[in-house]
Length: 451
Image 1 (spheres, rainbow, N blue to C red):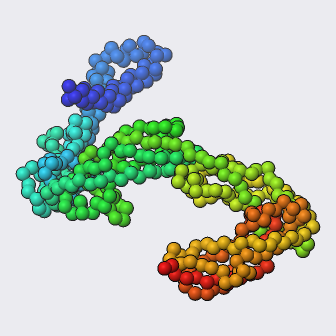
Image 2 (cartoon, rainbow, N blue to C red; image 1 turned 180 degrees about the horizontal axis):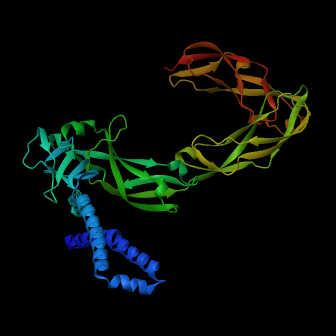
Image 3 (cartoon, rainbow, N blue to C red; image 1 turned 180 degrees about the vertical axis):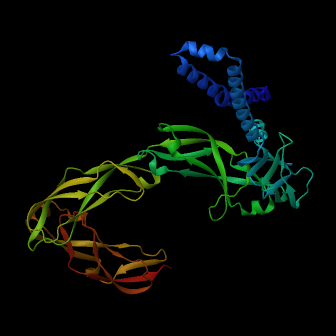
């Protein structure tokens, strides 16, 4: 049926050429003659009625037809060449037993012959080269490419015409599949991919022995950009491509069975309300202290992985109060903690009220011990090393609300061993509006090994 259609197409093209180069010129000539003799029809009739005139006209038309047909025939009989670029190569071999190296994907085919035959060959040929490796064993072979001739009078030349092929025995191994999530930063910040379950965790990798040695990992590539309207819940994905990579992250051309798998993605939206902690940084102007710190934002909602946001107790927002001597309004940026994907607020408007500074002493504050090794015990050398006095500086209204029970003084004994040691006293800032100063900067402690 296809050959019949192609033959009809060829005849149509031939008729079009005859119509264009023969019939149309003769018709135009006849109309021209008619137009020239229309004014004197008797004269035309007289000329046409003469035998010699008819013979002359017939001779002229015959010459014109002969020249036209002869020129077309000569053109069709002339030798020409045409190149068909990037034609596919069909390889015949045992795909289950062997792996090939050196097979060209495309070839160029040059057709040489009479123009008419080249035209026919171009229309009816499939233009597919064949590389027949049937019966060849593992090793290096030089094999000629073959081309099925559509017309025997045409010469065909293939580039390349002969190729060097290496045939390897095909081996297979079971490999573990790893999931690789792509473009997760483009996912809605409120959403988190909590779990990815693939239908199988092992696949079979096939190829030559050298190829399989190069394979370092098999990855299932899941592109979040392909998710359609992702929401909290389970999302089923099909036809996830599997790709083999070497140690450098380059793709290895190995056969993977199956080549695609399915997966179920669990999407969640973990969130937590986190309080803000406004921390004055620097020293106020002499004789001044902070009375109040107020903000339009006191907590924010953060989104991220559960194991990250659960470990966040508060978010510190530093306030530069160095040299401050009067009330001031601040527009402060709330820095997003590492690992948090989204935060409900990014800016806080903070008001700091300043008043005159006062002082108050709190006596008999016990010194606590931090980070002492499990194999040791510690005692203060004297009563003065066991409890100390803390001077607190701030405005009177704040100082009067401070309960000494909430004042915590401690020493960090990390790295200390047996012996007598002088250790720095640290006072925890439970109220950030005031300054805590221990009257005694160091205490003497005696550390002993447990019996």
